[in-house]
Amino acid sequence: MTTPDTQRPRPGSDILRTALRRNLGAMTWGTLLMGLYQAGETAFPIALGLIVEHALRERSPGALALSIASLAVIITTVSLSWRFGMRVLQKANTTEAHRWRVRVAECGLQPVARDVDLKSGEVLTIATEDADQTADIIEVVPLLISSLVAVLVAAVALGLADVRLGLLVIVGTIAILSTLSVLSKRIGAGTQEQQARVARAGAKVADLIIGLRPLHGFGGNHAAFRSYRKVSTEAKQQAITVAKVNGVYVGTALALNAVLAVAVTLTAGWLAFDGQITIGELVMAVGLAQFIMEPLKLFSEMPKYVMIARASAERMALVLTAPPVTTPGPRQPTAGADLEIDCVRHGSLRRLKLRVSAGEFVAIAAYQPRAAADLASVLAVNVPPHAYEGVVRVGGQELADLSIEAVREHLLVNPYDGEIFAGTLRTNIDPSGTSRSVPEAVEASMLTDVVALHREGLDHAVRDRGANLSGGQRQRLSLARALAADTDILVLHDPTTAVDAVTEQLIARNVAKLRRGRTTVVLTSSPALLDAADRVLVLDDGVITAEDTHRNLLASDDAYCAAVAR
Image (cartoon, rainbow, N blue to C red; front, side, top):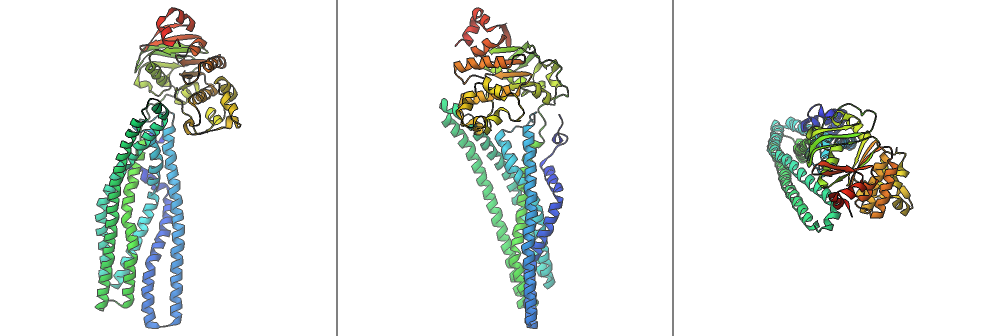
């Protein structure tokens, strides 16, 4: 399968260029409006100096009124250009952040996983914080240009009064930016490491939430908490380091800007005292020296935000440039829903060989739980076909030759720890809203008592990860979802470990009845499910060692009897 992101590498710099290119129109308008705002801000002290100069010379009420009107026009221009300029830029920023969030989420939700060494919590951080910080480049560039406009206008105005004043502003600005560029690089590197550590802490929290119940069960919650505290402390220490560098950066920028403003003011005062500039030009110079601190501050902070955006873009590139774990073929399964595993060697599986005919209900009793988990991973294509020896065939076609969409359409593997999502019972059973067998699936999975317990029925709200459901209810809900999918081949991995024996018996009979005529494989040690199967395969030490009905195996195989009898 080929996606736009796998056609060519997309490093952080390419991501930033893409963001800038597709927002060129909004950035152009934003730059013009913000440049007009900065020009208006710069024009205010210039106009004030001209007014003082003109008022001292003319002393006319009409000229004073005209000057006041001119100031009103400048103030109005400043207000409107700022308002509409920021509106354009922030809309583009928000839209671009949304685009990258969707792209990262799309990569995480693709049928074929990507070969990236990141946990789900880290991907979540990349899809939120890093996407937002990358999109900030949309605002950073126009603000950088508009601040440069303000500094240049101020330098030209001061240069017209006296060349030395203009040169002082230009030389001082270059010196400030040269000093701060060194600190901005440290901020970028530190921010990238901080984001990585925060993401690891988030992934640790997600893992702890998933395993909270079993952790409480065997008393491991305190050790888990200590593990999280260690990861969180590392993230905190890195955040403090970045904050210190940020503090030094901001403090240095303010100090240097203040030194430049003071230098301009003192130089203008000396020139006025020496008679080389007029009083009006002195007022203009002092006003510009005060004003120039704001665009200089903004101008000097922009490199820092550019480095932060670049660091976030590099983290997004970890997801967007990661190649798929496998490249599925283009074929579709042929007629018939048979499943064949031919000499597969993976993990604890040792040249495993078995065949399930179309319409057959087969139970596999794995003496080692790891073997059942490895087999489920292979069938679910969580392990790419090139990563194990042997062949898996679905409908007569090798798994490696089938498109992932075809595999998902014909073969469903329901894991023993199936996720439950926030929403309702109905949306968990039928996420797409297209299943026609929801009532049958609810009844077969014995979820009817949960539905009847609530007035909303299937529309009863389910919290994130099924927090308001018991372990047995979550397991039955997951089973109902698998049955409602109504696929040609259904593989269930320990679907009844959290329910009582009576409910287990009923589920076994219901599943066998509902799936009659369709291929079903159950990896289980449940006597009820084993008894309901057409035949039982014994998986021991990675290979099939026995095959018969459940009752025949109980009567003839002592090891089997000891493994499954309860």
